[in-house]
Length: 121
Length: 149
Image 1 (cartoon, rainbow over the protein chains, first blue to last red):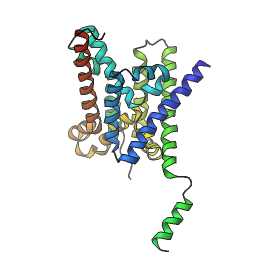
Image 2 (image 1 turned 90 degrees about the vertical axis):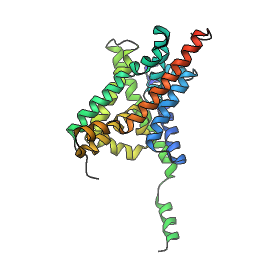
Image 3 (image 1 turned 45 degrees about the vertical axis):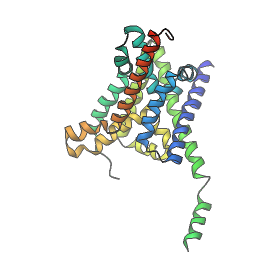
Image 4 (image 1 turned 90 degrees about the horizontal axis):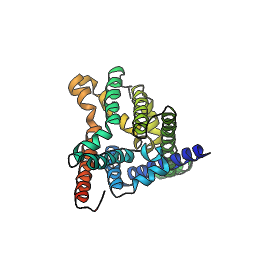
């Protein structure tokens, strides 16, 4: 039952964050590239002011799967590394914490781009 | 048929409001992708991954799947249907890496594929990482000042 509730919360929160993105694209003519950047930076900001962590605790993947969650990963890494290693943690922590996601995107991106040809449009 | 009558006819035939259906599609697809992520979280926990490893496991799998779906041309179809529902999740980030790299394959392996991998990921990483450094420095200053941490 607790599992089911967690899936429901992930669905609702993840969906709601995407609806915000949809609204931005439809009403402000932001390109999707700008939406990507805006969401990641917003995620860092919301984590910094202490809002995003409770949302992650509440909704699990509903908060970590959208790109705001990528910002959350970067910000949490930076803060944690500063706490552990001092000043230079600010420079190492963010990208260290997000390294798996970034590396996978680059590696799988490269492999797939080499394997497949774009479909004719 | 003049233009006015035509656009009226189009409005009548189009089911529902296009704006509302755009929101609905983004919502359920984005929510569904998040739910798959939650499923990976649960699988990761079952195989004994730590709290720090879980998000890496989940985002890696989602990125792997999305990169493949982009390669075979399925993700673009999902994107046409779902709009932001496919852009905002981390799968959209993977798509933004693979898609331009495939598109510019003809410009060569280095300046085509290699450079275009970062066509959209570059700005995301540049601003995201910079923001995290700014936050880290602020956190450090507050910590040293004794306000935080």
